[in-house]
Length: 126
Image (tube, rainbow, N blue to C red; front, side, top):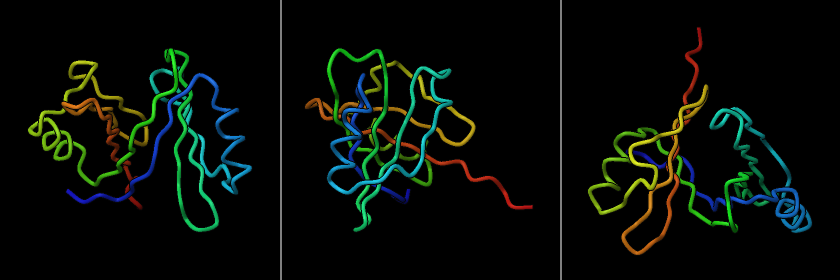
């Protein structure tokens, strides 16, 4: 398994307020993804001039904001199996979010630390 990206992820009911703070710190919105969990979750990717990244996910199912590490990998199943073998659990059972361009889920460590793993699906060039 190769890690292809690593950055913080904030899951919040109020993404505009969170993004405003990071925009004032010099981050710019780079990408918005809306086809997550049937459209109930939207993910915003931000980046600053130094190349630092942050992901912000909008979810109305949150009581309070949650911060996780977002880890992009080249092999989702390998990463999932590795973390499960280390005692991480999927709080949604075996549910994984599949979209047109990625496969992802959040796993929780035995101490309570969340890591969100994601594999981006690359379209074959014809």
